[in-house]
Length: 138
Image (tube, rainbow, N blue to C red; front, side):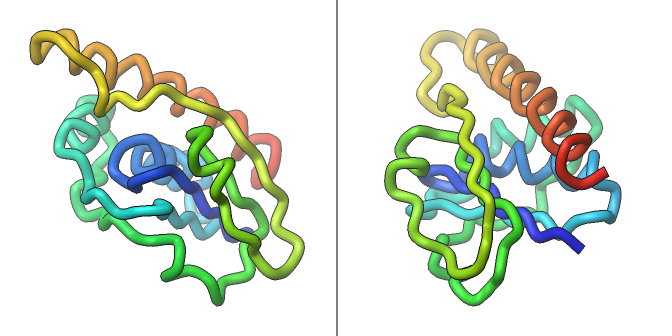
């Protein structure tokens, strides 16, 4: 079974959303992990925006990349430029993929405007995740 790691800066929003959708689209055909270069805790707005699309990530934890150094990943997907630049070397033959998504945690404005940014990023990650699974797992 394929092992996929999603990596971003703080493992709080983008990588958590991607982990949720990759798991959903893989439907048990891959092991999905997420981590950050740092750990910032799972953002409650990320949990809420995923819940609105029927995906529960409320039990996810914010993990540091060092926790996975002994896993031979098939794919490492970075979802922000900082993680891509600072992604450590993984032993084995992990294929690297990169897609920079805006950080919704940096959104400004009213609660409605902030959640609209979370929704926009979520929808972009959802489309990416669906395509990734179709191309590499299904």
